[in-house]
Image (cartoon, rainbow, N blue to C red; front, side):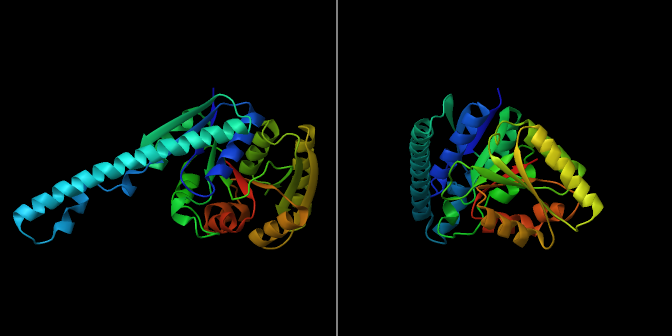
Length: 286
Protein backbone atom coordinates (compact mmCIF):
# COMPACT_ATOMS: atom_id res chain seq x y z
CA UNK A 1 0.00 0.00 0.00
CA UNK A 2 1.40 3.43 -0.96
CA UNK A 3 2.39 5.53 2.02
CA UNK A 4 3.12 9.02 3.18
CA UNK A 5 6.88 9.52 3.70
CA UNK A 6 8.09 12.32 5.97
CA UNK A 7 11.72 13.49 6.04
CA UNK A 8 12.86 13.98 9.63
CA UNK A 9 15.94 15.93 10.75
CA UNK A 10 17.00 18.11 13.66
CA UNK A 11 15.59 21.36 12.29
CA UNK A 12 13.06 23.57 14.04
CA UNK A 13 10.41 22.72 11.45
CA UNK A 14 10.73 18.96 12.04
CA UNK A 15 7.76 18.81 14.44
CA UNK A 16 5.66 20.77 11.94
CA UNK A 17 6.63 18.17 9.32
CA UNK A 18 5.38 15.51 11.75
CA UNK A 19 2.05 17.32 12.23
CA UNK A 20 1.59 17.78 8.48
CA UNK A 21 2.48 14.16 7.72
CA UNK A 22 0.14 12.86 10.41
CA UNK A 23 -2.68 15.04 9.06
CA UNK A 24 -2.08 13.82 5.49
CA UNK A 25 -1.84 10.20 6.60
CA UNK A 26 -5.19 10.41 8.36
CA UNK A 27 -6.89 12.22 5.47
CA UNK A 28 -5.57 9.72 2.90
CA UNK A 29 -5.91 6.70 5.21
CA UNK A 30 -2.37 5.80 4.26
CA UNK A 31 0.49 4.37 6.36
CA UNK A 32 3.09 6.87 7.53
CA UNK A 33 6.85 6.26 7.25
CA UNK A 34 9.26 8.56 9.09
CA UNK A 35 12.62 8.73 7.30
CA UNK A 36 15.97 10.04 8.53
CA UNK A 37 18.92 10.05 6.13
CA UNK A 38 22.53 10.39 7.28
CA UNK A 39 23.92 12.18 4.25
CA UNK A 40 27.38 10.81 3.47
CA UNK A 41 28.54 14.25 2.33
CA UNK A 42 27.90 15.68 5.78
CA UNK A 43 30.13 13.15 7.55
CA UNK A 44 33.58 13.13 5.81
CA UNK A 45 35.77 10.07 6.04
CA UNK A 46 39.28 10.02 7.45
CA UNK A 47 40.92 10.01 4.00
CA UNK A 48 39.33 13.38 3.30
CA UNK A 49 40.77 14.74 6.51
CA UNK A 50 44.30 13.45 5.95
CA UNK A 51 45.50 16.79 4.60
CA UNK A 52 45.13 18.18 8.12
CA UNK A 53 48.36 16.36 9.04
CA UNK A 54 50.41 18.73 6.88
CA UNK A 55 54.15 18.26 6.50
CA UNK A 56 54.89 17.07 10.01
CA UNK A 57 56.95 13.97 10.70
CA UNK A 58 55.80 10.61 9.36
CA UNK A 59 55.28 9.05 12.79
CA UNK A 60 53.30 12.03 14.05
CA UNK A 61 51.25 12.05 10.86
CA UNK A 62 50.30 8.39 11.24
CA UNK A 63 49.32 9.00 14.86
CA UNK A 64 47.15 11.95 13.83
CA UNK A 65 45.45 9.91 11.11
CA UNK A 66 44.64 7.21 13.62
CA UNK A 67 43.05 9.79 15.89
CA UNK A 68 41.12 11.27 12.98
CA UNK A 69 39.83 7.83 12.05
CA UNK A 70 38.70 7.24 15.63
CA UNK A 71 37.10 10.69 15.72
CA UNK A 72 35.24 10.00 12.48
CA UNK A 73 33.93 6.71 13.87
CA UNK A 74 32.72 8.46 17.04
CA UNK A 75 31.04 11.22 15.04
CA UNK A 76 29.26 8.68 12.84
CA UNK A 77 28.09 6.72 15.87
CA UNK A 78 26.80 9.87 17.57
CA UNK A 79 25.02 10.96 14.38
CA UNK A 80 23.41 7.53 14.16
CA UNK A 81 22.21 7.64 17.76
CA UNK A 82 21.01 11.23 17.37
CA UNK A 83 18.99 10.21 14.32
CA UNK A 84 17.38 7.33 16.19
CA UNK A 85 16.35 9.68 19.00
CA UNK A 86 14.87 12.13 16.48
CA UNK A 87 12.89 9.36 14.84
CA UNK A 88 11.55 8.19 18.21
CA UNK A 89 10.50 11.75 19.09
CA UNK A 90 8.85 12.03 15.69
CA UNK A 91 7.01 8.74 16.19
CA UNK A 92 5.63 9.94 19.51
CA UNK A 93 4.54 13.23 17.91
CA UNK A 94 2.63 11.68 15.00
CA UNK A 95 1.00 9.05 17.21
CA UNK A 96 -0.13 11.83 19.54
CA UNK A 97 -1.63 13.48 16.43
CA UNK A 98 -3.61 10.28 15.83
CA UNK A 99 -1.52 8.66 13.09
CA UNK A 100 -1.62 4.88 12.88
CA UNK A 101 0.51 2.28 11.07
CA UNK A 102 3.65 4.35 11.70
CA UNK A 103 7.09 3.04 10.74
CA UNK A 104 10.56 4.58 11.03
CA UNK A 105 13.63 4.15 8.84
CA UNK A 106 17.19 5.41 9.00
CA UNK A 107 19.42 5.34 5.94
CA UNK A 108 23.00 6.29 5.04
CA UNK A 109 23.72 8.05 1.76
CA UNK A 110 22.17 10.71 -0.44
CA UNK A 111 18.71 12.00 0.53
CA UNK A 112 17.72 12.45 -3.11
CA UNK A 113 18.83 8.94 -4.11
CA UNK A 114 17.06 7.47 -1.08
CA UNK A 115 13.80 9.22 -1.97
CA UNK A 116 14.02 8.24 -5.63
CA UNK A 117 14.42 4.61 -4.61
CA UNK A 118 11.35 4.91 -2.37
CA UNK A 119 9.10 6.47 -5.02
CA UNK A 120 7.48 3.19 -6.03
CA UNK A 121 5.85 2.88 -2.61
CA UNK A 122 5.31 6.62 -2.07
CA UNK A 123 1.98 8.39 -2.26
CA UNK A 124 3.04 11.73 -0.79
CA UNK A 125 6.37 13.19 0.33
CA UNK A 126 6.44 15.66 3.23
CA UNK A 127 9.52 17.88 3.76
CA UNK A 128 10.39 21.01 5.68
CA UNK A 129 11.22 24.15 3.75
CA UNK A 130 14.46 24.47 5.71
CA UNK A 131 16.78 21.87 7.12
CA UNK A 132 19.13 22.09 10.09
CA UNK A 133 21.70 24.14 8.17
CA UNK A 134 19.18 26.95 7.50
CA UNK A 135 17.32 27.11 10.81
CA UNK A 136 18.32 30.71 11.49
CA UNK A 137 17.36 31.95 8.02
CA UNK A 138 13.61 32.54 8.09
CA UNK A 139 12.97 32.70 4.32
CA UNK A 140 15.69 30.47 2.92
CA UNK A 141 15.40 27.07 1.25
CA UNK A 142 16.95 23.87 2.52
CA UNK A 143 19.97 22.68 0.55
CA UNK A 144 18.16 19.55 -0.64
CA UNK A 145 14.67 20.89 -1.29
CA UNK A 146 14.98 22.34 -4.78
CA UNK A 147 16.78 19.25 -6.13
CA UNK A 148 14.12 16.99 -4.64
CA UNK A 149 11.27 19.08 -6.09
CA UNK A 150 12.82 18.96 -9.55
CA UNK A 151 13.69 15.25 -9.49
CA UNK A 152 10.67 13.59 -7.89
CA UNK A 153 7.50 12.63 -9.73
CA UNK A 154 5.30 12.29 -6.65
CA UNK A 155 3.29 15.01 -4.86
CA UNK A 156 5.41 16.95 -2.38
CA UNK A 157 4.18 18.92 0.61
CA UNK A 158 6.64 21.65 1.59
CA UNK A 159 6.03 22.55 5.24
CA UNK A 160 6.78 25.88 6.91
CA UNK A 161 6.94 26.59 10.66
CA UNK A 162 3.58 26.90 12.40
CA UNK A 163 1.74 24.27 10.35
CA UNK A 164 -1.88 23.72 11.26
CA UNK A 165 -4.46 21.49 9.62
CA UNK A 166 -5.79 23.64 6.74
CA UNK A 167 -9.42 24.65 6.38
CA UNK A 168 -9.07 26.32 2.97
CA UNK A 169 -6.59 25.99 0.13
CA UNK A 170 -5.74 27.81 -3.08
CA UNK A 171 -5.13 25.95 -6.34
CA UNK A 172 -3.10 27.95 -8.88
CA UNK A 173 -4.45 26.91 -12.29
CA UNK A 174 -3.27 27.90 -15.78
CA UNK A 175 -5.53 25.90 -18.10
CA UNK A 176 -2.75 23.77 -19.63
CA UNK A 177 -3.04 20.03 -20.27
CA UNK A 178 -0.65 19.31 -17.43
CA UNK A 179 -2.57 21.59 -15.09
CA UNK A 180 -5.70 19.68 -16.10
CA UNK A 181 -4.02 16.45 -15.00
CA UNK A 182 -3.18 18.07 -11.68
CA UNK A 183 -6.80 19.17 -11.43
CA UNK A 184 -7.93 15.59 -12.00
CA UNK A 185 -5.59 14.35 -9.26
CA UNK A 186 -6.98 16.96 -6.92
CA UNK A 187 -10.54 15.95 -7.74
CA UNK A 188 -9.82 12.27 -7.13
CA UNK A 189 -7.68 12.53 -3.99
CA UNK A 190 -9.20 12.45 -0.49
CA UNK A 191 -6.42 14.66 0.90
CA UNK A 192 -8.20 18.01 0.56
CA UNK A 193 -11.83 16.87 0.54
CA UNK A 194 -13.96 18.90 2.91
CA UNK A 195 -11.75 21.99 2.60
CA UNK A 196 -12.85 25.23 0.99
CA UNK A 197 -11.19 25.54 -2.44
CA UNK A 198 -10.04 28.80 -3.99
CA UNK A 199 -9.35 28.30 -7.70
CA UNK A 200 -7.12 31.12 -8.96
CA UNK A 201 -5.88 31.77 -12.49
CA UNK A 202 -3.34 34.50 -13.24
CA UNK A 203 -3.91 35.43 -16.89
CA UNK A 204 -5.47 37.97 -19.22
CA UNK A 205 -9.25 38.27 -18.87
CA UNK A 206 -10.49 36.85 -22.17
CA UNK A 207 -13.05 34.30 -23.31
CA UNK A 208 -10.61 31.38 -23.41
CA UNK A 209 -9.26 31.90 -19.92
CA UNK A 210 -12.75 32.47 -18.52
CA UNK A 211 -13.91 29.27 -20.21
CA UNK A 212 -10.94 27.29 -18.85
CA UNK A 213 -11.56 28.63 -15.36
CA UNK A 214 -15.28 27.84 -15.48
CA UNK A 215 -14.59 24.28 -16.68
CA UNK A 216 -12.09 23.73 -13.85
CA UNK A 217 -14.56 25.13 -11.33
CA UNK A 218 -17.29 22.76 -12.60
CA UNK A 219 -14.88 19.80 -12.37
CA UNK A 220 -14.05 20.52 -8.74
CA UNK A 221 -17.66 21.18 -7.78
CA UNK A 222 -18.63 17.85 -9.34
CA UNK A 223 -15.99 16.23 -7.11
CA UNK A 224 -17.67 17.71 -4.05
CA UNK A 225 -15.57 20.81 -3.41
CA UNK A 226 -16.94 24.16 -2.32
CA UNK A 227 -15.20 26.41 -4.87
CA UNK A 228 -14.48 30.12 -5.15
CA UNK A 229 -12.96 30.97 -8.55
CA UNK A 230 -10.98 34.10 -9.44
CA UNK A 231 -9.20 35.34 -12.57
CA UNK A 232 -6.40 37.80 -11.76
CA UNK A 233 -4.05 39.88 -13.86
CA UNK A 234 -0.42 40.68 -13.08
CA UNK A 235 2.78 38.96 -12.03
CA UNK A 236 2.21 35.46 -10.70
CA UNK A 237 4.08 35.51 -7.39
CA UNK A 238 2.80 38.81 -5.93
CA UNK A 239 -0.76 38.13 -7.13
CA UNK A 240 -0.91 34.69 -5.51
CA UNK A 241 0.78 35.89 -2.33
CA UNK A 242 -1.62 38.80 -1.96
CA UNK A 243 -4.63 36.58 -2.56
CA UNK A 244 -3.39 34.07 0.01
CA UNK A 245 -3.09 36.76 2.66
CA UNK A 246 -6.40 38.44 1.83
CA UNK A 247 -8.40 35.20 1.89
CA UNK A 248 -6.66 33.53 4.84
CA UNK A 249 -5.47 30.60 2.73
CA UNK A 250 -3.86 27.80 4.80
CA UNK A 251 -2.29 25.79 1.95
CA UNK A 252 -1.10 26.59 -1.59
CA UNK A 253 -1.60 23.88 -4.24
CA UNK A 254 0.07 23.91 -7.65
CA UNK A 255 0.63 21.62 -10.59
CA UNK A 256 4.34 21.36 -11.21
CA UNK A 257 4.65 21.63 -14.99
CA UNK A 258 2.31 23.82 -17.03
CA UNK A 259 2.91 25.60 -20.34
CA UNK A 260 2.37 29.25 -19.52
CA UNK A 261 3.75 31.69 -16.99
CA UNK A 262 2.85 29.17 -14.29
CA UNK A 263 5.38 26.76 -15.87
CA UNK A 264 8.16 29.33 -15.67
CA UNK A 265 6.99 30.19 -12.17
CA UNK A 266 7.32 26.60 -10.97
CA UNK A 267 10.48 25.39 -12.69
CA UNK A 268 12.47 28.62 -12.81
CA UNK A 269 13.61 31.15 -10.25
CA UNK A 270 10.02 31.95 -9.24
CA UNK A 271 9.65 28.47 -7.76
CA UNK A 272 12.28 29.12 -5.14
CA UNK A 273 10.92 32.64 -4.63
CA UNK A 274 7.36 31.51 -3.94
CA UNK A 275 8.37 28.68 -1.63
CA UNK A 276 10.84 30.96 0.14
CA UNK A 277 8.39 33.82 0.70
CA UNK A 278 5.23 31.87 1.44
CA UNK A 279 3.82 32.09 4.95
CA UNK A 280 1.91 28.82 4.51
CA UNK A 281 2.80 25.32 3.42
CA UNK A 282 2.63 24.25 -0.25
CA UNK A 283 1.49 21.11 -2.04
CA UNK A 284 3.21 20.54 -5.40
CA UNK A 285 1.34 18.11 -7.67
CA UNK A 286 3.45 16.31 -10.26
